[in-house]
Image (tube, rainbow, N blue to C red; front, side, top):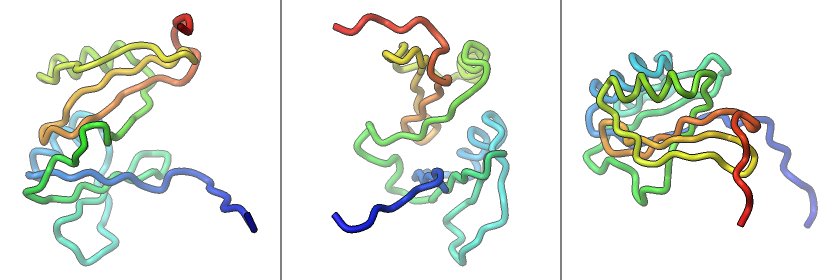
Amino acid sequence: MPGKIVTNKINHVTTMVKDTARAMRFYNDLIGIKQIQSQVENPNITWLQLETGIMVHLIETPDAPAMPHNIHLAFEVEDFEGTKKILEENGYKVEREGVRYDGQAFLFIDDPDGNNVEFCTASGYAPAPPRP
């Protein structure tokens, strides 16, 4: 194979929402991802950005949520238990949680539109389960 593409980081992720205002209460108000100025002439896309520079684009469409359900956004958090508590206090049900073989704890919830969202830790956060 001639040549090889070198990637530096994820630039952005995109998800579909039915109601941008409702989605913003989750992504902006609860998770704290700030809205930035749109860089395209499409009023159906809301641009958000993490402190790291990685962007989240919310596309308003009646076709939300994105399917299949295993398509998801994953956000690494510092306070995993605190994140879980805040999500539950805000009415978000943890659909699935666990620890991966590298010790990374994770949990999944559905955003207000039914999109699958993961919150996780860095590797080594918890004791790793034994491999089968």
